[in-house]
Image (tube, rainbow, N blue to C red; front, side, top):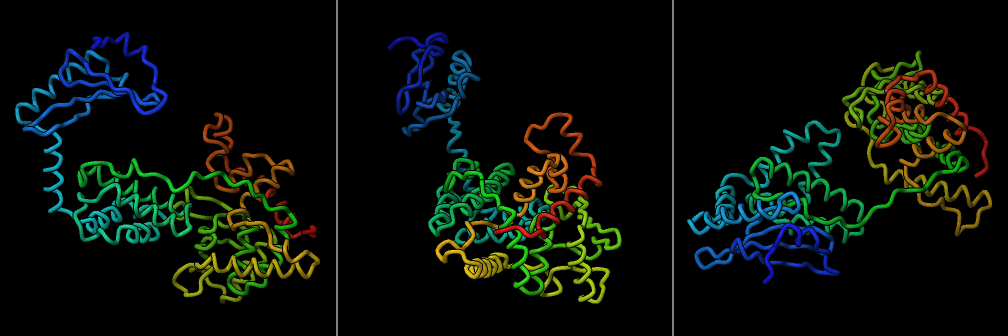
Length: 406
């Protein structure tokens, strides 16, 4: 067998498929692997008490030939001397299995990590549902196949996007447990997504925006006002649903979202255009002019929920209205849309009208307009730009409430 050299290894090309494996003739048991995708690594194969073991030596090229030989000899000597890292990992797993259940790990995760998230309750419910069959088991016994099984089950129910979100949640939980020594491996890293997601390209036309705004009135309290304010302010659904009267300054036509409620943890000021202010004034009077408490609630204690059901009702009302307006029944329903599209419509139509991108981003409470904004753009987006934002929201209100053909 030809002797391996640094030069010969560097000259190797990935195989068309599968992987290439070369055995070193100098360091017993040392092997070099090269995959079809170009991933290269070193491993050591050695027999320990009659049982074949393979140990990871390092990734190539960060670990070169000479370093790999040195590390392989050390690992081989330790293995033959009675030290078995794989068995030690198994022992650690067995020891941990008596110390911490999945339930206990999840409780700790919720207290130390989820407590800082706005979606803490929703995330914990999501994880508990996925891990329900394993809650009483040792967390160290949790397997990657079980995480993948939960992801695939969600996808099999016809919810591939939700399955991707579940994968992200399970992966973070597993990584958190691994970094704290609760499980021997980061079992979430190698799980697969249910589908490859593509960015949405749907932009509601001004006609569609207008008909949605008009027919939202048919939803009744509190949904009519909620939907119209969601559209007029272009803010996130959760921020509008959780709006508090103490955040609203009606005389100043200003809604101040505190950092604790904001998705990016940054306090955010939202100008209230004349139509938005009219809606809130009416709600304020109807509620007895409260100074505190939720603006949108059916219980008096929790924000409104059940958005999907309300969206279905609104879709039905829109379809009927379009049929009555002369649209063919087969084409009367609006092309698939969702409430978040209000924000996309705001950004797109304001940009078409010549509004500065930085102003639009600030209204939407985005940190920057791109992942790698220029220094000027970063400074521009940090500026308050309150007069410009006020003008942008007033212009949007005019677009939304103007007569535009659907």
